[in-house]
Structure formats: structure tokens, C-alpha cells
Image (cartoon, rainbow, N blue to C red):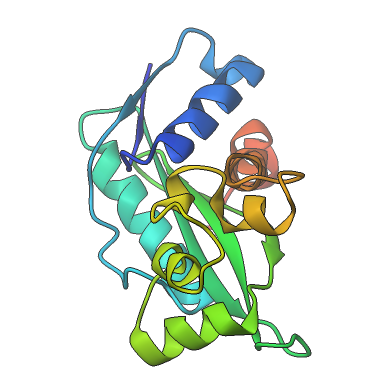
Length: 181
């Protein structure tokens, strides 16, 4: 079985590589990285856009493989928060017929970061760097913004794995998730 991850981001690829061996469904599966586009904004700003980006990545990665995994991080509106938004990760797994969707825990970015995202159109990598919260302009390919804010207690890898586990619920329990006809 060949499983394709629709990204070359090493954190996203490692998350899938780490999680696949935990499932009997995927014994002996090979995980490959495929460079695809999300076809959504560089910084998704809604749950709909984030899910669509993950689905687009999964579908594009699926071509010529048994499963396509799409992983997308994005901002979602959350009432009552300081900035009105939180960041979460979405995993979409495409099997050629249907998608399984999972969402990670979410966290709020500092107001200074969100101002840069909204006012200058920066993505979180760029905004955290410009705000002086990291020296790594590609923090999302390392510990991630969540890793910075939690001081390593939860990293981008961890929260990406969470979204994968949540999506895997559908595959591991397929009999409960059959579409009504």
C-alpha cells in the first residue's frame, strides 16, 4: 500500500510516518511525500477554507496511490477569544471515494501576530517572525507557533498527529460511518 502526503513540509510528512505504524490497517504501508498545492489562501482564515485546503491536498496526493493525506493549518473563528480566532490543524484522508476529516486542538495567537495576519496578509510563519517571536522564518516546518507558545509542551508535530488520529476514526470504524443511501 502506498500512502501519499500532499506536502513536502517535513513536520507533516513525519506526522503521517509516525502514525501509520500504529494502525493494523496499514501494516507494511509506504509513505511518500508529494508536492501539491492547497488551492486556498496561504493563510486560511476559516474552518471551511482550512478543510477545503486539506481536501484539495488529499485529492491531489491520491493520484496513483492508495490513500491521499492532506494536512492544512488555518484560522477559525472562536467567539469569546481575545482575537476572535484560533489556529487548528485539519487532516483529510481520501480513499478514492470519500474523505475522512479530523481536526486537532486549537490555540490562540498573540494579538500582535493576528494584526500582522489581517493588516499585511502574512501567514503565521511570517507574522511570528515579523513580530519578533521567533528567529526562524519557517517555524511551521519546525516546532510551529504552537510549540513556541507552549514552550515545547505541544509542537506542530503533536497537533498534526492529533488531526490524523481524529480522521483515522472514520477508517478504523468504517462500519459506523457508512453513508446512508
